[in-house]
Amino acid sequence: MSRIIDISQPLDPGMAGFPGDAAYEEARTFRIGPNCPVNVARVSLSVHCGTHADAPLHYAAGGTPIGSLDLEPFIGPCRVIDARGARPLCEPQEIESDLADAPSRILLRLTDGFDPHVWPAGFRALSAATIGMLASRGVRLVGIDTPSVDPETAKDLAAHNAALRAGMRILENLVLRHVEPGDYELIALPLRFANLDASPVRAVLRTI
Image 1 (tube, rainbow, N blue to C red):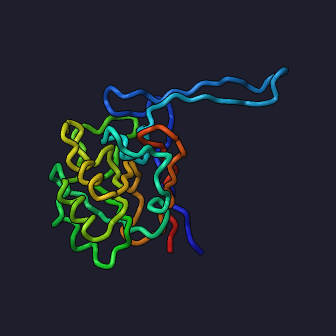
Image 2: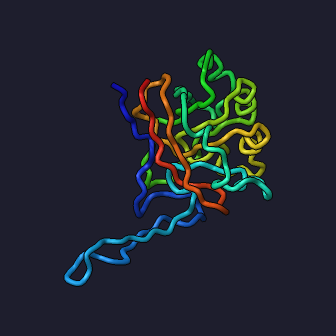
Image 3: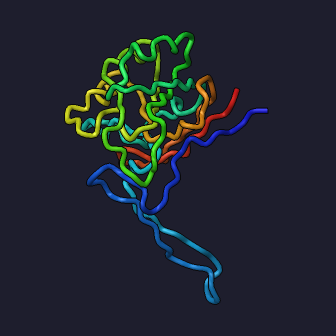
């Protein structure tokens, strides 16, 4: 039988977000009591909180919003690759040998894992060359277990823009420390926000 592996960060108050971005907050609109039969919550958050999918609108002024993207890249066969290393950027030669007969979705483990309530300053990211190499091999979606495919101080967003040129989809803030490298089925659907630049996802792997 197949097994479901959750690779999503939990969303809760106090979780770390990109410095300066909106924090995750939650409150109760209604609570079960003598005159109320239900609990109803409300949340306020950046669409980049926790595990999320970026849309081209995030890094291109006229880019496509998340709710208009084709969902096909977010569901299907994927490969998890251990790409941990000491360099600030993951370069093509570090993962090229793991791509033989790879499916069109690649998830890269870049970190040993971190406390989601502490911002991981100096996190490992991807080079634009790595995005280009993946695109040349037919990869349509790349996912990472750090907050961004670009370094936190990047201004040119070289990796994001390489993904834009390739039509590649991006998942960020995955949780991969408990996942063995190998091939799985990915399910990571973004919400259908009609006008927004990203969406939280509940990302899972299914063993195949």
